[in-house]
Length: 255
Ligand code: PGA
Image 1 (cartoon, rainbow, N blue to C red):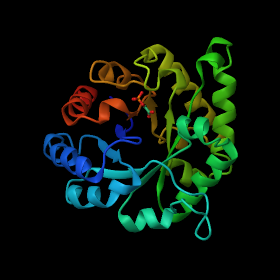
Image 2: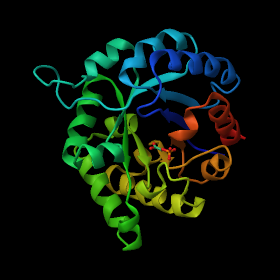
Image 3: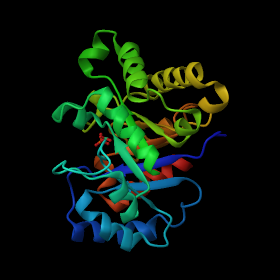
């Protein structure tokens, strides 16, 4: 029996216009209704589809997340979207420090930490991503990288803030590649993250934090991954873009 309620979030990345979002969300609203309540579910569309998503999902209990949030409160930061704007739109979560932002936009642990703190201060719930590359794994660096990213990205959070934060362990080599970490590989890193949490905050807090796994989660592997002791949910990319596939992934995960 899981100690923590599963939390599965779909990260649509740079996919779906507002009208495409509307179509899939209408489907998800009805297909996911039997599962809502048994777990927490969120979808993270592009900024441009958020308003449509708020309207379509009204009354459904499927929550919304953004894929990023600015570290700044407001002002002359062209192209940025603030936490306050997101909250005002009806967003609950913000993905922070996804590996694609770290890789293509040079986001550092320090910036991820600023964004995480800004989200929390404003009332958004951050989903903070950490994970090693294939090169780092093959060189036996996984533990060091996870420890460094954990400490850097989550630096200075209070226990209360830590409990509001979801950590997503996403091995970079498993994202969008079809290669999933085995349940043992994933559980091993999740246990390390739980230990880092315990060392920093004590076990009472550590036991409350949701740690998602991300990287080619699909209906075929969601059950075995979610059955692991320290895996409390999933951050899903490709398999969240189709309502049937995402629903099956969720159905398998909770059974
Ligand atoms: P994927 O993406 O499920 O397509 O591998 C996961 C993610 O990047 O969050």
